[in-house]
Length: 343
Ligand SMILES: Nc1ncnc2c1ncn2[C@@H]1O[C@H](COP(=O)(O)OP(=O)(O)O)[C@@H](O)[C@H]1O
Ligand SMILES: [Mg+2]
Image 1 (cartoon, rainbow, N blue to C red):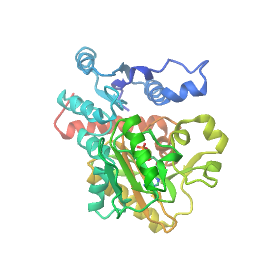
Image 2 (cartoon, rainbow, N blue to C red):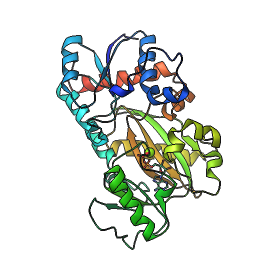
Image 3 (cartoon, rainbow, N blue to C red):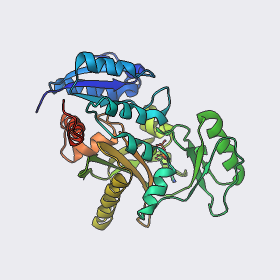
């Protein structure tokens, strides 16, 4: 393996310490991705420089000129606190003609809108939930074709921001209430989707032109599923105490027929092609009891902490964590080469 100089971009508040000593699990949970990536790359012999970026891009250019990295490892998920600006960082790196990891700016834009991505994949006959968008400052009226229950989400935010059990609405009154909540609290437009009862399925994939699909992964809701319509709320996704209390767990999806597995794999590749995703991504589905995988969203640059779904699925497929990070770097370099950028 070639050793590289790797400039790691991350949010300054997520700058990890050098060691985990004396840190609680709750503390570690916040910056675990940053810690895992930096410490693992260092242990693999790379020269690593972490750089905190919140809203000013110029320091990236300055460090590229001064430190001369071979590649930028892009862990930024927002700029100016806005997830919708993530593509601007990738665009900036393209203009600087430096190889970088993860998805290209076009893919980031196409995947970002929970409405746009569904419209695009629907054209390729991939099942998607019916939906309607409610822009800010507009009266909330449910189109008659859209049947209750619905789930109301931010159109553009992720990480289950604004998602709780109250996101599932069974009446027009509750729909209006929840859309207003998204407008006022999350401060974005809202999308209301047909609520799909089913299993929560995540599929990791990596590659540029040719893609490798990782084993189909499932989030199991444990006792939090009792009597409730199960969704991945903020608590299910990020609250360690809640996860332990309810036995929320993840692992390879069991009892899927070989034709269904093949169908999901082919849909994942089609989604990536349609949304122009490269690098690494995770495609999320709800799988109904009838075996229909509904596309919920595409996550370019998904969380790659060692214990998160993507890295776990890779490990299950025989790709150890250091190897996974090296492959992600290699993909960034290969993409740059393909566009004529040499460092
Ligand atoms: N149409 C839907 N039907 C059923 N559950 C849904 C639907 N859309 C979202 N969910 C649930 O809400 C979670 C978060 O929704 P998602 O669109 O992935 O938002 P985020 O970008 O915040 O992760 C999903 O993981 C799933 O559990
Ligand atoms: Mg999601």
